[in-house]
Every structure is written in structure tokens, then in C-alpha cells.
Image (tube, rainbow over all chains, first blue to last red; front, side, top):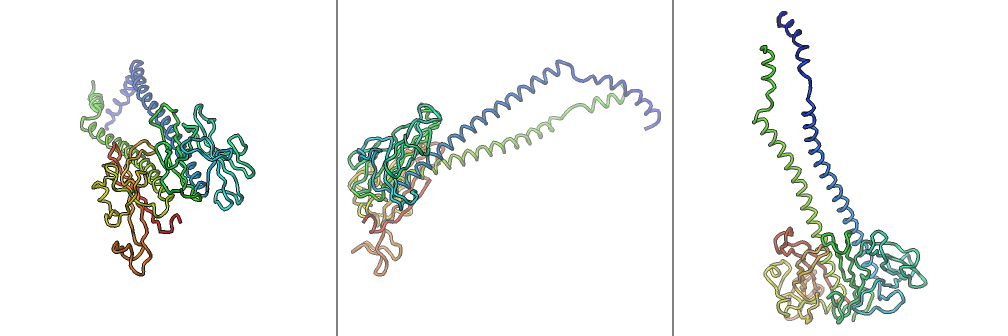
Length: 218
Length: 191
């Protein structure tokens, strides 16, 4: 670049700088509005995904709890020989119960080496009005109930207060009969739902029939 | 306007259409990859739900056989439409009409070859149950008496529970195996 050209450039620079007066207020407003719309839609997507993530997480936890509870009951009943209500009366076939009790021998894996009574019972949920929670409570001297101390919660958000039913070969529990010449079987129904009884999408209805393997076949 | 100013203005003419198109295509590929990740996550979650639900149904059915004594482990194949053994049932690798254990006269769920059950997730599942004589060693021979050969132990009853898709939305084509569970029962069962 020649000397003359350089001199021209230096003269023009202040003029160009004066031209660059930046954005006008309307331009800035339009830009900010567009930006706001974009950020707003992104934020709502973020909020929605966070909400559904929490929801999915809660449902997952409730379902895992449900399965764990059923698994525990299953393992205990496999060692049980008979079932009674919390007063020690035999269960009536086809009737739904909120609490069942069994006496487990000291050799059963879930006892701590002593013969004990184990009660599984439901009472009102502390997390959600109208729902029920499932508790396990043990005692060595007499049959414990859900009002006994030391109960441990295994399941929550249950939609029924009476999950237990003992079918016979002639009286069914929810359409399920005990096969003839079979061990006693307990019909367990643990429907969980975080969004209350009217919702259908979140319902997880775990149903099983568990055999009392130390019982007698009839 | 000087020559320099004109050159400066010409330089600020933005992106060309081609550049814009390329940028948009690259962006679309990126976004599609993210969407594909979401889709595969959904598919995996759906599959996990179906398998765990089918597992509950299979466990429940097997539990009924565990409660029975050896002689009562059998199927009812003569009770009409409930006991119809269709091509899907007969097409299974464990099915053998010669070794099938039949004789149950009730329509108890442990006696029915094919049933439709509702899983914990509310979907319908097809539950196929097979009860077949089987040999732990030796070859099964059904006549004149049931035996696995002179030196082999007596035959066992092999119970196979297969949970299949009913072909509902998002569950794969009808008959696809979701869960298979097998258990052998010897003549000492329930003695």
C-alpha cells in the first residue's frame, strides 16, 4: 500500500466508525422478542421433561417397591404351613383380608433363628390420602397387628386395603381357584398407582398366587 | 461512495442459499440423531416393561405347578375351545404330542395349554403351558411302558411356560416369545 493510500485510509477511519452507530431500539426490541420466544419454548420443554422425569422416577420406585414386597411375601410363604388372621382364626376362602399372619419356624430364612409370628397388613398411607401402605411386623409371643410397634413399610400407594385372599378349589378369589390336590395358595393383589384410583395410565397391578410350601395338599 | 466502501458493502452480503442449505442439512442430521436416541430409549423401556410383566405371569403359572403333586401335573387337552392347540402352540420346540402329559379334567389355569392373561402393566399376554415327559439321560420311550432306557433314571415331567405377545400395539408381532421358563418335576414331587 502506497503512502498516499495509507493517508486516505487513516482519514476515512473516523468517518466509518461514526457510521457504525449500532442497532436501533426497534431492532433491539424485535431481536429480544424473538429471543424471548425461543428461550421460552426451550424452557417449557425443559420444565416438561423435568416433570415427566420426576413422575417416571416415582412410578419406577413405586413399582420396584411393589415387586420387592411381593418377593418378600413369596419367600416367607414358601416357608409357611398355614395362614390365619391377626386373631388366629383360619381364613375364610374367597374373602379378602387386610392382614394375614403366619408362624414361621426358626429354620425359615427370613427369621432370625427364633420361631416368630409374621403379620403382613395394610393401613392408610402417610404419603397420599386414600391410598394404603403395606407393612410387615413380627413378634415372638403373640400375633402382631398393624397397630403393634416396630412395623416396617414395604409398599405404598396401594389402591386396595385388602390385598390378601385365600382361594379354595370351589371358592375363587378374583376368578382364581386353587387347583385340586394342591398346596394352600394365597392370592395377592398389589395394585399401585401414584395418580389415584381414577387414572388408568399409571396403574401397575401386580397379582400373584403364592403356594405355602410347608402346607398340606388338599 | 469510494471504491473501498463499495468493496466493503459487497463483502457483507450474508450467506448464500447453498451455504444455508448445507448448514440446515447438518443441523437436521444432528437433530435426527438426538431424536433417534430418544426413540431407542423408548423402545428399550417398553421392552423392559413387557419382559418384567411377562415374567410375573410366567412365575405365577409355574408357582401353580410347584403347589401340585407329581400325579396332578398334567394338561387338559379335551375341553373345547379353551384347550385348542393352535399352530403357534404346536410350533414350539418343546412340543411333542407323543410325550405330552394329559388327563386333567378341570379348566384350572394350570391345566389349560393356551390362555390370555393381563399383565401388571395392563397389556394382554398369551400364556402357553407345555407339560411333557422328558429324560434327564437316555431316550424316552412311551410304549409299552414309560421309560428312559434300562439304565437311565425314570422320566421327569418337564413343565415349560412360554409367554408370547398377543400382537397389540407396540408389543411386536403376535406369537413373539417374551419370556420362557422351564422346570422339571420328578415322581418324588409332592410325596
